[in-house]
Length: 547
Image: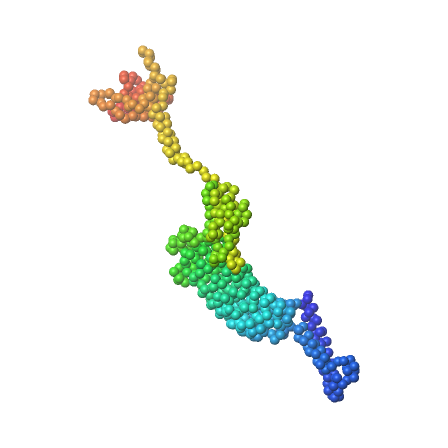
């Protein structure tokens, strides 16, 4: 609404101002024609108006006309000036000084001269994407310290020099992606102390000065996008010393990295920690096997290949892992806690904060805690109540600081007793079970009613025959056979399963209606009676059966 009202009011204002100018010009022509100067006019003289004052008023009016108008083809909306997609080859001649957002995207700008935006002291966002800029002169952003966002993406810049951003001390977001940048000078980003996001992807970088963006120089930097460049190797030591917040937002995918165990292990650690730079682009993390461009491997999907062929095992990853941040101790032991830091120098100050004893620094030692000159903290005799998180902070001479946390757990020591040998007890159980099975099979006693009774004279007892058969089968002593002369004692035991027989054997018809009477195993003393059992005994005989 505000934009439409401003645009609609411009013609009315212009018509009024042009009418005033025309009136003044006519008045000046009349005065010149009569030959009377303005100062000689008694009316004007009495009013105290001079020629200089009239000229000043005319100049102020023209200035008002210029300040309240937009450049041709641009759109003014409150404090926003949009000149996008106007095929501009140079900047508009005059820019409104109240502009805070200037949009110059999609034009044909090829250069920016010194002081191009010097009149825009309130400028906060400058958009110069999709132009043909190849170089930035020194002083291009003079008097633009209020600038917060600078978009130079999709241009033809081939390098980033030191003087490019010297005046932009308040810059927070820098977009340089999709250019032709092959080099970033080491101090080009040094003055950008408030920088939070830098996008330099889709360029031709072969290296990057990571050492120039440490925590003390860029404390707010959280995103650095260097993806889709031409970096073959990474300075792992410099990257490991970057602040953790920057490591989380350091995007290095889609580079031409050569497969190396150290590089692979670093990304593995980032993956375990859940860094968005790895988690969101797992499939785009590739490396070249032996540097061959045709042998590109997605190393998060083909871990086995790297771990086997390049010996990038988990043990190798542990060698470059971060220092241990948790310790396990037993009651009564002395525990030393190291304060890990990347700060260097002779004048380092260490401060430890314990969960129960508060803050301490040398020589403020007590009976339970002791600090060493190198900054490590010793728990003299650990107790269960000493468990907790210990916090260390290190200061250097320039007041830079780093912190480190150690989680300590103190356990009660248990008596070292010989563990219960379950294998031995299992063996005993198996042997006992086997003995019981053997006893059941071979030492099962006869039932009481099955005990053999002495037969009465002249009385045949079927029960005795059945018991004799059963006991002879279950007995472990083989029966002696004495049939026929010269027969040897048989050591074989015979188990016989008898079924009703309906056929004729040896010329005798068997009964088919019921069960056969019990028989006795051959070899008992005495001859079995003839009769119905003759056919049965013939089964056990050595003579062939004739049908």
